[in-house]
Length: 260
Ligand SMILES: NS(=O)(=O)c1ccc(CCCCO)cc1
Ligand SMILES: [Zn+2]
Image (cartoon, rainbow, N blue to C red; front, top):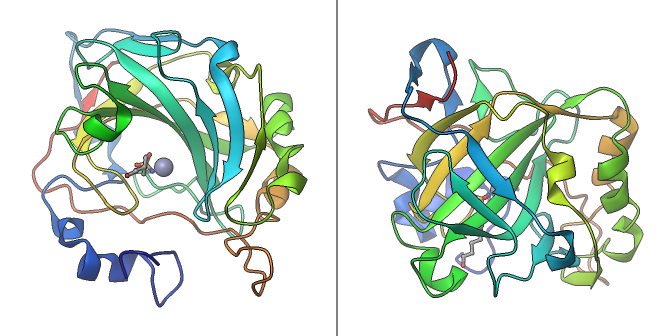
């Protein structure tokens, strides 16, 4: 199944362990974040996110989500400070969402699901490339941002306006001058823990940084997310929705909070 994992009953999260045994590992993601169990760590620094819109390259449908990819040959768009040491470069961001507005996020907060979750994927420049970093214990740092239903989000609309061109899996189009910082809430308070990729190959290589505050998306905009397809051109159309992995066992891990 390693080349055909997905989110259906036949190839979804409950089946991934067959081809990717690390699915049952000790630092899997996502998790349910229980704020009352998180320990405030005064040693945690504020996140430092420096994004250069000119590094934005393209928007694509990879058959699992839609993704915006960035040039990562220089330190133009980086994450520093926060819980990490060194410099991590932005590689891409993507989303996970549900078939209805009552679910879709991967992380949950005391059991609460959000309609969608944004992941900003950064790699540790102590390694030569994303490909080198992706399976190292300190290789990646992913910033997770929850979306909640509210007013229309003009910044998300810039992505949605491209969906008609990337409806089918394995399609892409140019996408330039987009500032990912416009997708961040005003307050960057966060929870952090050691985890994994939430899709195969599920490498345990991610320092997770999940923001406490959400950004808004309208219900009409969420409906547009669901017009994307898991399927390729010519195949029976299959709506891209419920592309989220449910929370995994904490296995004794500590979740730290950057705030009191
Ligand atoms: N949902 S996530 O942020 O954990 C995430 C980020 C990046 C990948 C890509 C892995 C490529 C392996 O060659 C997969 C999943
Ligand atoms: Zn993700």
